[in-house]
Each structure stands twice: as structure tokens, then as C-alpha cells.
Length: 141
Image (cartoon, rainbow, N blue to C red; front, side, top):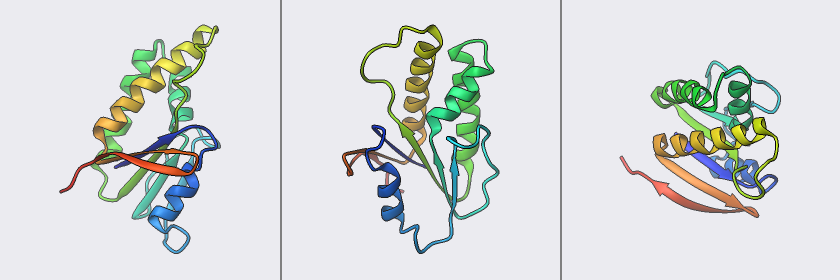
């Protein structure tokens, strides 16, 4: 798995497209901004965009942020076992002012925990800020 994170509108999608040459390769692109459920993976290269929105959807049907994290971990394990390239893109929402609304604070906490789990499970992690990527983790086989 490959995890790409960074700020909103900082070029993550454009960077992933260029890095993997997706304009010329068959791939599956799933946006959690449009769909709340995890898809069945079909192509050799799969991009799952907006994982923070998936985490929010899990939190909306959970009792606690910890329960949402456990649900996310189960899905993460499935993605990790896939025999294909799985790229997870998530917008970092953990910086800045702490939300006043309790649900939004829980969302921020759950997203931070799930992003840590994603980084730990991924072979490669890149942050993209202002269109510039920095590799912060890269495991070789």
C-alpha cells in the first residue's frame, strides 16, 4: 500500500496521477467524497481518494471514535492483503484550531489515529504540500 497525505487542494491527486502515470494506465479511482462505502477492488492499480471522508462515515455509524478506528483497521487489513497496488489519499485535517463541536473533535481524533494506522501499514508514505512531495517512509522488498 501507498499512503499519500497533505493539505486540502495541495496537489495530491495530480501528484498520484503523474507518479503512477495513470493517464496511460488502466486503473480504478474511487472517491469517498462521492461514495461512503469501500468498493470492491477490480484493477491492478486502485486509488482510494478521500479516506478521511470514509473515516467520517464509519464514525457516523459508530458509538465511539475508537469503534470507528477498529472498523477502519479491519478494512485497512483487507486493502493491505490485496495483490495489487492500492494507493490511499487522505487530506490531513489534524492541524489547526480544535473544533468546538464534539462530533467534529471525535472526527479529528479518529482521522489522526486512522492515518497513523495507515502509515504503519503502508510500504510507502508521501506528504504533498503545494504540489511538492516528500517521501517520509519507503520500505524496499
